[in-house]
Structures are given as structure tokens and as C-alpha cells.
Length: 170
Image 1 (cartoon, rainbow, N blue to C red):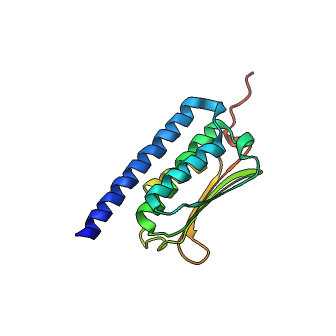
Image 2: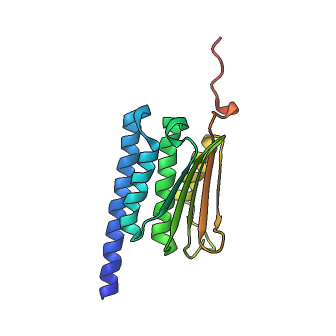
Image 3: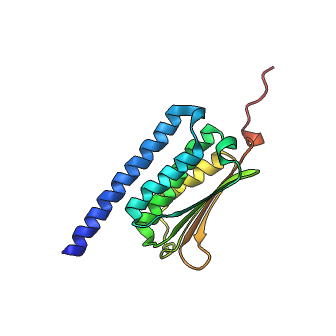
């Protein structure tokens, strides 16, 4: 019975964390350009630590604070929240690494050491992550980590995708 109670508490904690992450994403959208993406990503990862019962590692590479447009930041935070939520709910991970790199592309990589992907991957949140990448002319991959676990890589160009730009006014 004790295991069932602990599991119920963990699920409740996870639900609360997901709500906090979603509030953060909506707040980011409301604050516009003045938001510090690096601080927002740090906040999302720190909140996830309470649910995961361990602190994920977090690495920033490149000018995250200055180059990521607000509209991309909203998508990035939603992708990060979904990736952390999936790892928390499904992976049984004991470690989670988050890397946000900005150079020519904006690349978010979330890697866990959990049990890996199931044979039949359910594409609910994963579909949303893929759509957010494709809408921005980017890519999304999900697969095994270096040894075990799962690695999610979401990458979008820093500059707007040429085919997605509005035509010039005549």
C-alpha cells in the first residue's frame, strides 16, 4: 500500500509541475520580447527537479539571452516542458540532461538515462514537438540516448526559414 501512496503523490506532484510549466509558457507569451529565455529555461528545469526527485543538468551554449526571438522562445519552452514531462512520466530516469545551444540554429537536446522508447511510440506530445519544429523550418528527432534512455533533439534555424517569410509588399 505504501508504494501505491507514493506513486499517487508523485503523479500529483508531476501534474502540479506540468501546470507550473504551462503557466510559465503563457507568462512568457504575455511578457513578449523583454523575457530572459535563459532564466525561463532555468526556472522550468528547476521546477522539474521537484517532480523528478533529482536535479537535471542544464547547459547553455552560445548567446541564448540575446539571439532567440520571442516567438521561437515560446515554442522552445513548450517543447522543453513536453520533453521533461515525458521523461518524468515514462522513462523511470535517474538523470536528465538539458542542453540549449544557439549558433546558426537553435538546438534543444534533452537526454535521459531511462528505459528508452517503447516499441509502439504514442505520438501525442511528440507530434506537437515535431509540428513546432516543422512550422519553423526545423527538425525533430527522438531516439535512444548514447547508451540507454531517450534523446530528444529539437532544432530550428536562427534566421527565419526562407519559404516561410512573407512576400514583399508591392
